[in-house]
Every structure is written in C-alpha cells, then in structure tokens.
Image 1 (cartoon, rainbow, N blue to C red):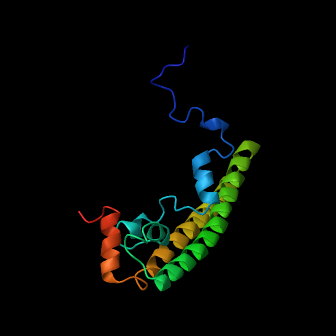
Image 2 (cartoon, helix red, strand yellow):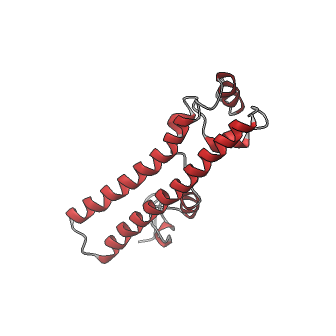
Image 3 (cartoon, rainbow, N blue to C red):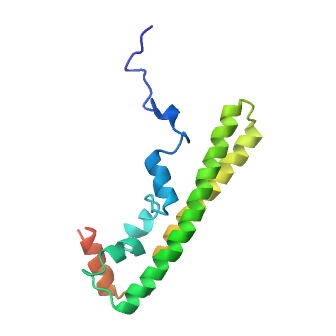
Length: 154
C-alpha cells in the first residue's frame, strides 16, 4: 500500500533529530539562555523583561543606573537560563535514550517525565522571576513606553 498523504504524520523527518522532542532551533535557544516564549505571562501582562528593555533602552530611555541594573539582571538570568536549559536538554536526552532501549517501564517513564517537568518549570521560573524584578527599576512611564514600543498598548 502506497503512503497516503492523509495518513502521513506531521512529525515526518523529525525522527532524525538528535533529541526527538526538540528542534535544532529549540536546542539553540535553550543553550544560549533565550526566552523560548516562557515569559509570555509577564510580557503580555505589561511586565517587561531585561532582554527587550536593553534592546529598546535608547527609545525608552533608561538612565545609566537603570541600564546597569537591567544589564546585571539580564546577565544573571542568562547564566541561570543556560544552566536550566541544559538540564532540560539532558532530561530530554534521557527520555529518548530510555525509549530507544526498548525496556522502559511505566515507573521509569514517570520519573523521566517528572524530571523534564521540573527542568522546564525551573527554566520558566528563571525567566518569569526576572520579569518580576524590572518594575522596581523602571518608572510607570517607562513601563508604559516599553509596552507601547512592543505593540501592547492597543
């Protein structure tokens, strides 16, 4: 029977990934400490993050003290996000390896999934908790300007 396009999986080609559940783009984002969309709850509720604040610092504008404080927040967040992202990658590798082995038990699977969930939670916490620290550095007008520049004012 020929391969029918209607039964073809949307995952075709992904079976060749080193880590099945993560694309190369995902892995690069995690390894560089990128946001990976994990801080949307803060960002879309008007609580700025340091990366975008630094990108927009000339347009907000930030004082030199504010810029230094946000730069320090960003450096700390990035360092912790890289660690957490690498832990998530390691946990996903462990899951892939366990499935490849062919003798994965339900109990082992639950442990692996819990590790992945905790790793992802830690990574998300790193990003969101950093957003929590920005309002004390910015004035309300600067926060409003940031949200306007990001397109969140309408």
